[in-house]
View 1 (cartoon, helix red, strand yellow):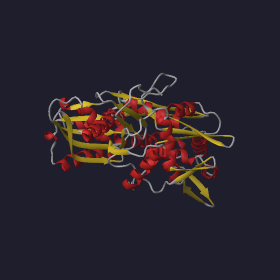
View 2 (cartoon, rainbow, N blue to C red; view 1 turned 120 degrees about the horizontal axis):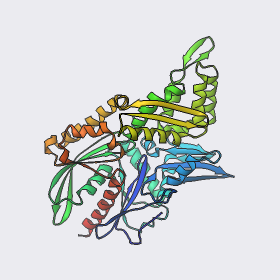
View 3 (cartoon, helix red, strand yellow; view 1 turned 45 degrees about the vertical axis):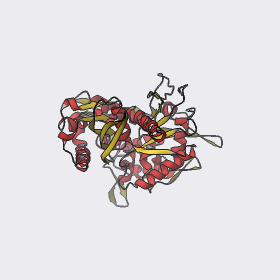
View 4 (cartoon, rainbow, N blue to C red; view 1 turned 90 degrees about the horizontal axis):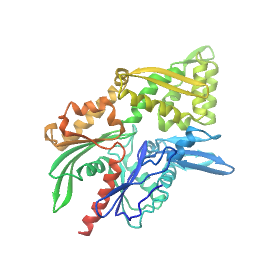
Length: 428
């Protein structure tokens, strides 16, 4: 990790579904992001992932770039775990066992945070703002539970006074740092698990930036949901989705559980257990598509989730530039290729876009404003580069009002400024 030689007055931690970022704010207003070494050079984004394995009796783990490196070139038996944040608000996920060791969701998150913050040397008493979505991901998300679990995870790595702040508020602070006039700003933050929106009124009060929150809204739909649609339509049908198996004298459909869990990054690693794989292979043996279901089992057993993730990410990136792209995945004897058009992709995510659009409506309505009352729109997050997502804003607002922020750094940098600003406000 590369860290500053100066002592920060504020720290911003953007613990994301896909990527995490840590930023430091200093008394003079400067902001620096921590960086970590990789084979390709330093990176300021730390992939939110763990790779876990056993050495002798010890359960070992790495996170971020090291987890990715080990997942890309597996060394023996291991488990690659991603999208941890998605489990925070679910009462259905409380704990799991990895190589015989019990991990609660708080343990998994704190294990990740320990790697993320290793060597950061955050000064004792330094103000820390940690990001949280407006609405947590999950069909039955429990917000209070998610926040309590997140605070517990921070406490387990020694950070007992982290103020949780809405992630779009952090992005808004980053945008507003250079404002020279009062503005009403709509912030749209598109992460891996959630899409969050805030409407804020920024003004200067005695030289200090003042932010009045007018409204917040969000929806548990973002990049991971779009990935799910691609897998469900283009990958799962080639891995036995829709197959049947024989039970006595009847033909029955393969239980939907296998493909539903396979299509979601936060569920994929939990399919890799003896009972699940054994059950899948028993079904495959009497299936009308045995080879396809065996390929599904191979991907799960050989921990090829990261390789599949990269293939899906490459497809989405190409479709953001081109009208047609080739999905290509290959590993351990399994090969999947499918041509996908942008029109296909946009038809698959149409219901998701409608819900995102509805959340924007809700933010404006709660603020008592129409699109005309917004002075600027600040968009951040990787999913904001999807053309269909960008069109939601192009159709509402003039081009000169829309500003694109750094896809990964805006939230953490703004949270650091927010933490520092609170220190300044308390001191004055």
